[in-house]
Length: 75
Image (cartoon, rainbow, N blue to C red; front, side, top):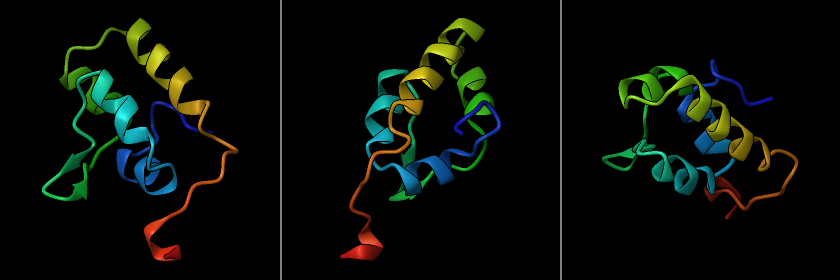
């Protein structure tokens, strides 16, 4: 389950569409072509998101769980 301690890198690798969700919250999930290091909570706090906004972000990200995505390594 995606939570505050999940790393952005792991979430982006597993759910590429998460990049768009992170961007809506002002979090750059990809830097120089690589996923950003650190946890969701660390980067969200760095960007000034409140606990309420972090919970909203997590709720959106969790909607991706269970969906199938084509990954680059599968191509």
